[in-house]
Length: 406
Image (cartoon, rainbow, N blue to C red; front, top):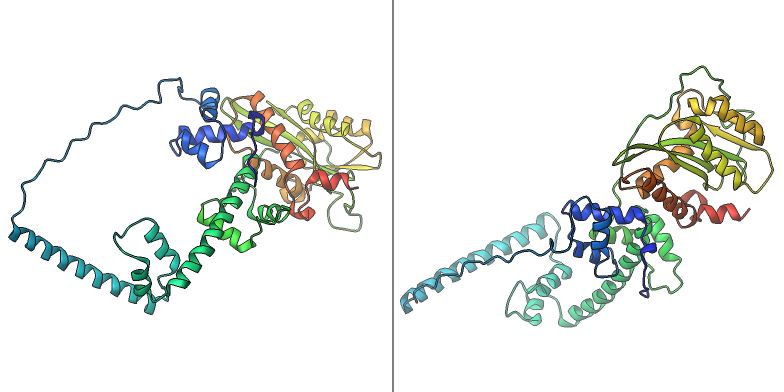
């Protein structure tokens, strides 16, 4: 894939903060982070450290003092008899080591079904772990022909070149979607028109596992809903039954939920309105408290993006904000039909919970400094989710593509 010049706008804020945290924790140096993530510019990471880091990254602090190592003391020369005795002892140790390793290889082959393959042999030769040994001698040891050896090396080199292109493509995608899954990456690779990035699904899993690029599973559960209140509750129109509403097209059912976002200066909250058919986030708002006026702001923003005038159902849990008179007045003003879960059952609002999880486990991986930075990170993440992230339930289309197709 052709290299192109990136600007600071090509790196999301959440990505910058994640790189800064890795460097400050000591997991990577700033140069290693630059090479690992393909960040262009010699001082780009240092600029991020000085802007978003908690440590002092002022110029002049990165130079390390050199260490003066003591020199080895010269020893007296050995006599010929001493040298012969030393060589005999070395030969005996090497012979014993060779016999032991041959026995280990035989046990692995006969008892465990493990054989020394060409890949391990090539790695030993490439790393020059054995000196003054030829390919011909290695092939004699392993029972391979030199022709088969060189054919294998040619195939392996071509495969490694393709693997480098695939890894570079994946790193470019994960700059904007840090925790995008392997199946979605496989779909994006297949969509490349040049055909050079074709790889099987299982081979892609193996490649990412080998490079330690598989996404670990994160599970967390936090309660943010207060369903014990005196306000009016509404029936669940999406529940299985004779009067169940079946979602067929966008802007027929919207689901709403509230989730928390921890920052370095305290807790903030994110209100979301998501289309149940296209999975597109229609409206959002990041706020510092759980007042109804803040929660309703997400719905008001979603209504401004509405394209049709067909009947619309608003589905949520039985949180006190959604049941309040102020929030219900927005429903009445815009002709929305209200639907709610039966008590505190998060599975009856699973779609909204799923979207919350995607944003928090795939995009919002680092703690923002304050409310303003949280709003910027959420805005960038939702734009990437709506416009770039393929969705499994949408047959790998993005929410924007699916929403605009109707």
